[in-house]
Image (cartoon, rainbow, N blue to C red; front, side, top):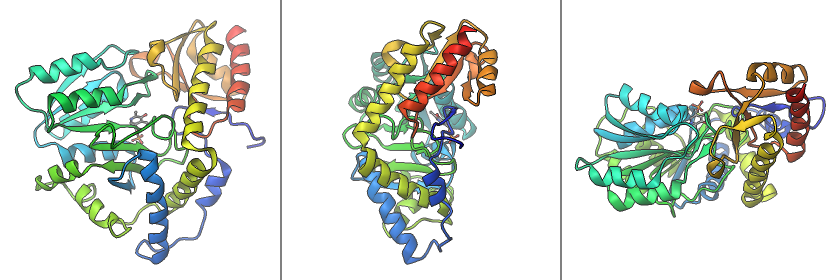
Length: 359
Ligand SMILES: *Cc1c(COP(=O)(O)O)cnc(C)c1O
């Protein structure tokens, strides 16, 4: 970086502060050492308020997709309901099918959020029980935020034994999460989105209810066995060699978020970034998502001009924007405004984008 402004606006991985990269260059320690246990305790002390939970939290050395698979392997014996509203929520379906589960899908058109009443009706009308329901907190392909609290509530009311698995990948650290209050069972987030670390690890919260279920499944595999993760976490440890540089970076980042900026101000900054982005692009691009459910962390735009031309022109000015995704690949582009990006950087990027879109 030649200046303090971030020019990287991809919706994951996101820009990483130099201080975090520096932190990740510390000398190696053994993962069975007292130093590592201290590091683990520091991280776990930060993960509890991040997830807002008193239940088990841990870090898995794998990206979010790995822990999505883990959540299904640990929590589902036979049937799962997948709520979908875009490409990332559909990933749950692909994983469930690859594992041989019976997966039903409850879909809404791209740009819309999952409908709470439709979910309630669907679960109430099914006589066969679902082992789990999957919810995607923030659909990164469309820039839509789902109402996890309300969706979880209807699942719990209509089917108390059904586990609730939440992908919070592009949400955690950028918008509120109340794991215990919302009564969730698994919540996972890769760290390269709102937590603004390099990709490679995933923070995870698991309920006591989910552990009880996992213990009944004899074949949970080894690497992703939540029961082993919990047993090790109780000793401030992990089952296998973790990405230690990431642990250093995460410990520092959690300190900076919780004690420096604070979660409250971080969430406010993300909402501001959404509002500024929508406001300042409205005269040259259509917001792809419904405005009421537009995400605080990523905005998908359908511009009048070709999205490819816009992105190429921005690249010439040193700015990287995200491409369109899936069904919207040709017609849209995305601005990731999550993690440690400042309002000042966003405004500077939008100045350039306004020029590019008008020329
Ligand atoms: C990025 C993303 C993923 C994929 O995560 P990986 O860390 O690349 O495995 C899954 N879900 C959502 C909502 C995402 O934004």
